[in-house]
Amino acid sequence: MSASTLADWVGGFLLLAGATLGLVAGIGLVRFPNVLDRIHTATKPQVLGVLLLLAGLALRLRTPSDLGMLVLVAIFQLSTAPVAAQMIGRAAYRSGRVDRTLLDADELAGR
Amino acid sequence: MTDGPPPGGGVPGEPSGVPPAAPAADAPAPAVGRVGRWRDQALALGWLVAAWMLLWGDVSWGNLAAGLLVGTAVLLFFPLPPVTFGGRFRPRALLVFLATFVAELVSASLHVAAVALHFGYRPRGAIIAVPLRVRTDLNLALTAEVISLVPGTLILDIDRARGVLYVHVLDVRGPGDLTASRERVLAVERRIVRAIGSPDEVRRLDLEPTERRNP
Image (cartoon, rainbow over the protein chains, first blue to last red):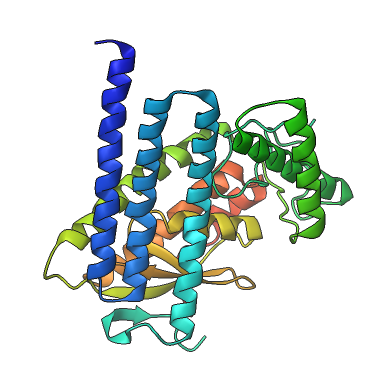
């Protein structure tokens, strides 16, 4: 098996794995009871899913200019997903859209 | 000296934070004077130009000129409060941080995926306050970014003046999980400070008791 065939196979596997994680993130988004729980799925499996997709794409494309773009997407994904999550979480909390009965502790209350 | 940052060689998330090598590391950390400001601006410009070139996909003089123009305009018209970097750059600790981060991102994804696919199970959550030991803006921002991507925790709010992060914890099964999450956040802070903090900040990690919990 040549190196490019191997890269194609590994890339294909990574694409599938990333897509699966994206699907699971979507399931979690629908199924979780609370805004705050839902954001967890939008940050962790979703981010890793995108990273795996990017890695799979990199292995399939293998051109330097595309690689630069993919690296850029990965960096921005990693740096913006938590910021967006925090913004949504804070807005939801401050406007009282968080179901307190699902919280075991709330040390932000009254601040 | 600071005109060409290595592409893709920094911490994801804080483009202007990590110079390739820390100049004048023995200067006191808070006293970042005009030279420091210029250095930070030059670094930010370097990152913007690098991002511009990656976006266009090739390195040419035309792209360099356009990148410098756009980068300067961005820095002029959208000024940000200066993020001072008074620390020291330690490659080995940074490698430890990055490796742990990747491992934790994978386990976090698997954890959330398992909870999501556990049908009929309603996860309970909690919001905890975690006071950090190093209160610089850079450390607060980096720690907040990273804990949203590691297992169980998600940044919800930041008390910048007191250096407290308010963190949401997913899938709480008992008081033990809250303690574990607190320790995980502090461990993230420790790894970040060890990678890019100043010697004084690293010392503070060990001096201040982790038991300085919520009041």
